[in-house]
Length: 117
Image 1 (cartoon, rainbow, N blue to C red):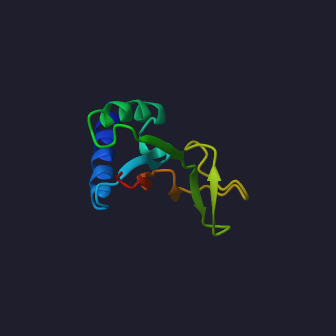
Image 2 (spheres, one colour):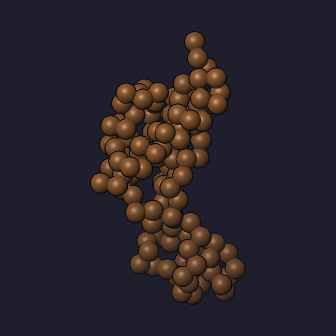
């Protein structure tokens, strides 16, 4: 399960960033996750529970914000969400496109920090 290695890295990055703020406690880690990232949200959430144990993030929660798959239409010259990777065409005009502009995300978007007591 590669989600565990991802979760361990998320915990390490979040702990490192929190340390920059005089030992602030991480309350929550917000993560953008696209369907094309190759990561299963439920598996990542479970892996995060294991990864945070015995770490500075032991009480932190993981907030997964799933991003849609979006493509750029060469005809309309606009970005639009598509329902799946099987439908890589503009939903407005039907033009096929392979230019995926969103859906591959796997990134920490923000941390909720609390000052140390």
